[in-house]
Length: 136
Image 1 (spheres, rainbow, N blue to C red):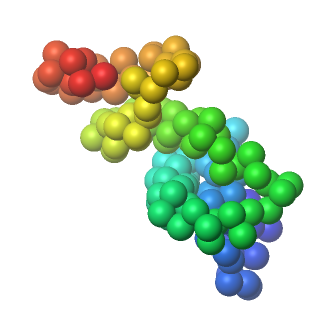
Image 2 (image 1 turned 30 degrees about the horizontal axis):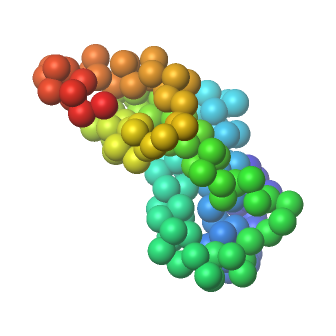
């Protein structure tokens, strides 16, 4: 984390590098059980993910081969999951919902089973749980 912070301060980073750094920092925060840091990095990751989706050609040029797994759909879903889990832990259920809204629940071949318990935790945080259950 310290080395990434030094690099971020010292050099202008490419957007794809920022995506990778946010993913790594979210996972490191998960290992350290730092929910605030995990949530903040997961939120920033989805910002850079959206940039990647909107600037596909530029993102492809910036792609670093050693870190290509951090720009995959499956890694994106992983970050959505840990971001939602952190938001649940911090009882920020609306923020958790912003992560869940990005999960492609109805995509053919998508396995939602790893997300179901954390999604239940989010839903239980709402008073109007029945309305949200229909959405997911």
